[in-house]
Amino acid sequence: MKKILLTGISGYIAMHCARELLSRGYEINATVRDLQKVDDIKKALQDCSLDISKVNFYKADLLSDENWSEAMEGCQEVMHVASPYPLSQPKDENILLKPAVEGTERVVSLAIKNNVRKIVLTSSVAAISSGHTKDQFSEEDWSLVDKPIPTYPKSKALAEMKAWELIKKSKNKTKLTVINPAGVIGPSLTKEVSSTQLIISGLIRKRIPVNLPIHIGYVDVRDVALAHVKALENDASDGHRIILSNTELWTKEVSHILRQGGYNSPKISVSIPVAKFLSYFVPMLKPARRFLGKAMTKKSTKAEDILGIKYTDITKSVLDDAQSLHKFGKT
Image 1: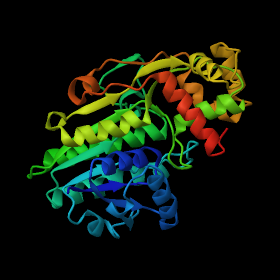
Image 2: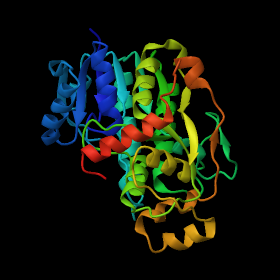
Image 3: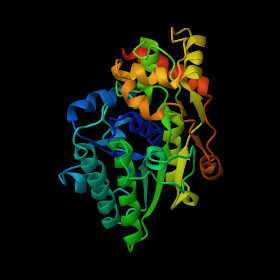
Image 4: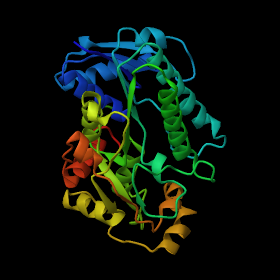
């Protein structure tokens, strides 16, 4: 039985990674910042008919060395999913940058020291597309960290750069694959939600009262988890960054899917100037300003070609997400 270190198991994506790993017979050493979350994690995995005796929990923080060596012990592979995500732009960027970059350095350095076979790192398309004026992106692109870009994409890009730097300097055979998902949606296994899920929640709850001229990529969390495990098991992914994005949708298209599913989402769409004006009065719209009118698209088929990913139907992803949000009182 293979043992793997999974960081940040309580998170939205990491819980699905745990589900996929357990279903394939892995033993997991899982890190959490708060051990009070362990009971909820165990219940969620038990509800998926999984054997939670194969999960060992360790309290560990990205900014501290405490317990990381113990968590890494006996692990042949590492899935580093843990990373901070703010619901609003922090006043001090180091609140986000330090745990993202130092945490990645801590985990990757320890993995290399322990001669781990492979690391799969969760990054984001945010590490690829931010700061550019063009609208098509591939894994060759990097967010422009020297420009005044938002802190989150900066944190993801710098953390990923640190991981690649450490791997390239290493003299052992530890391999690295990086997964760069677009906006992640789909059902939550716990109350933890992604920032992209807040778009769907906002449309249903009318916190986003109109359809904004925003066009972003979406991918199902179950496909993201599967891609992590396939990357782990497929040597052809070694040394690659892999974008995961099923399709790009305008907000009005997401609302249309929700209405088809019986949800009372907005019917009115607004122009860029109107959306900018509204963003000064509707708090949830403020973070969306930088996306207005930009039709960003991926230019990559690595997920399909290397990992064999067949994406979940986007309508199912959106409606399963909405159902999950309702289950956990987020709609």
